[in-house]
Length: 70
Image (cartoon, rainbow, N blue to C red):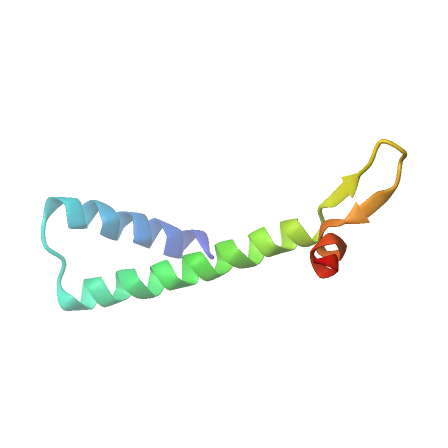
């Protein structure tokens, strides 16, 4: 998510604490939240995909390979 969109989302959150948002602002906030959560989930999934488990004997197994075993 671009920094300007994140700043706008934070601004709308502050405004919502001070006053009621207009319908346009509410829709914009919802859209920005969806975008933020999609980016967060994508980054988190990439981190999980690159995580490996290393056992005491030195064997390294990617986390996603362990998931496939179950």
